Length: 315
Image (tube, rainbow, N blue to C red):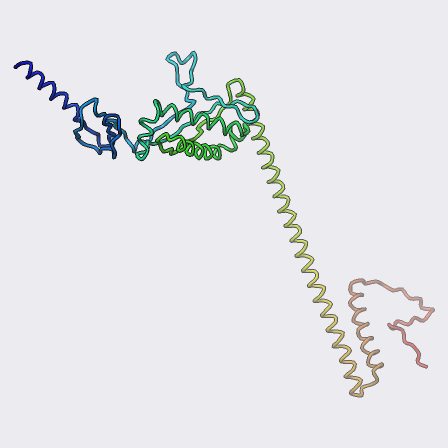
């Protein structure tokens, strides 16, 4: 009787192994006799077949996981040496070595959770190898300048697209959120040379910037001088045109007046013309003599005709 009681208690305890809970932020993937039962169980208390007839894998599908490659881990005696968790040295297309630190964020795919849990012995290891091989392939086709400084953003974008595509083809059972090269550094022995190159590039960029600034300044000054010369020439042209137009208008008015005087019978056209020309000559002489005053010494023994213009005898 006592044996039966112990047997019943043992059986009850064994059946209770089928009782399990799923946390609020996770879901439970149930395997009965090795076959996955879908869909995954939601959070809460559940009852299923006892172990090992049924097994439960709890997965948080909302968790963003991080996988790092090339991260430096400090040794306990860190003053002596450091060791890398994974090899982080990559060879560029122009035969230069670079140390890269790569971070990848991913989530376990609820739709393909079977591939993640049961597709391989270590899906994280497969994912790590995928990132390493993809990075090696891309870096080997790029120059050191592209990877080290100039094309890091484009490199991250290409790396993300390639890892996503290959992860889907290999059915790893995860969704890749982001892949970034957080740090790209030369080996310790080449750091000084890389620093010299970086300084030289900075000097070159600064010199180019200064030269362009100087060229733009000189161009602006020359354009300002050209505009000033053009404006002065335009003002002079307008002034000359206005003066010439005024002289032409006065001349036309004068000829019209001479013609009207001749038509009115105040003398012949020739006489009117001579009278007007004499008046204009006198006015011109007055203006000229006012600007250039001078003394004239006359010889009393010889008569001098001071009329201007000298009178001409008519035949």
